[in-house]
Length: 532
Image 1 (cartoon, rainbow, N blue to C red):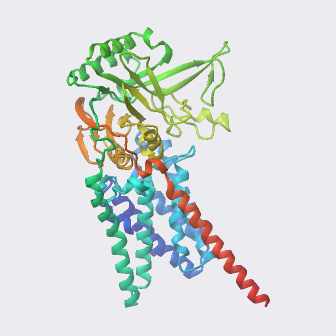
Image 2: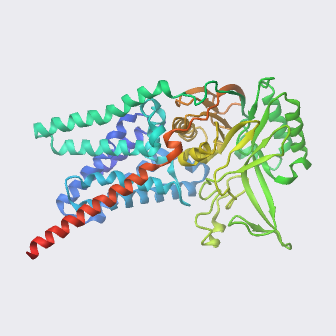
Image 3: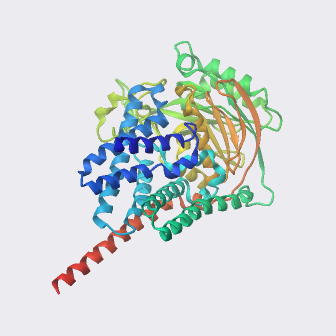
């Protein structure tokens, strides 16, 4: 019963502290403590480590389900897969740390949980089964006043902060009866908790710093067409022409002679078309004509697109029967300007199981397991590296849906010169659940990391604008057809994180290597003494 209560308490604390499944953020600073106590109890009793793994897995599984249960609204099988596999990976990471800590067994080896977990999150952002939703640093997306220093560390810094406080609280529990050690640990915990928050408050006035004396502005109109993805967007009666007309009418509510950019959401043109033949389609001509009519406005819009190729370009290339040609499908962003050819950027961080069949590059037969979730299923084509787009002398970062939870991906776009972050998304798959709220909230962290304005256009869910401090300036109601205008400040200043990326992962690796070198050196010294 004690094991059950400790495992349940840990998952409950982590659920209640996660954004929009409670948002009681302080609980995350003690969320791992019950698991650490459970481990201590198992080690003291001499029980087999695999039994601890079962309890740990149960706790992590409940955590995953309790925070991301809404994934099953889009796909029950996909949700179950995400819960079980992510919990398994977390269990393996926790188990690896437990094993290393037992082998090294020094006063400070328990702190190795921090670099090991950081390396897990770093790797989890970069493979085919990527699911970084529960990156610990994401917990502070509803407490952006605490983490303005993400402009230096990114979310990995927040993850390290959470784990360090948990480990210190766990140590405090073990020395509580020793008054001197107890007081020392209490003061340490208070310092570790308050110092980042104080630094964050100091940084807020400098968050809108501009590298130029007279930064320019961008006047944008953001659209939320609110097309139901289940019953309207991909229905048999759907047409890109009708969607284009609806978007034009919605935009014209706010477009003025000062407007520079109109932003429409992911797959606002949901029916696939050939990219180099856009001008031959009625909807393509209507959109191009409208852009010409607007005094200065350009149009950034999400679309399902196709390219015809004369060779197999990637795992996403599919042969066209009875020809020597191939085609690739994309979840794309399309930029229409007055005097230039259409610009395309293809979504590169794909949703496993829906847009990407994991490891199909090595095991092609897995492509048959793709989940159909509206539009094109199977593995989509991607870019070789993050892309930016240009209107006049302004550089935009086109960020499609899932890409917005990858800090390193977005910061690479800013490193290339992006001055504003434009998120195109479709959050209607999840219904009225915490999912679309969390997704919007995570965008606030991208603003802080790069000190860029965020303009977010959602088909369904929530659209809005976020300033470089991560403060929400405008936010639309859920499941409402609407649009709004927003003026943003453009900047070329690059933060430390923008320049150097997820450097805490490199520091973590160095930390682990240093710990092992000390361990083996001490072991060698003991061995020599025994021989003498």
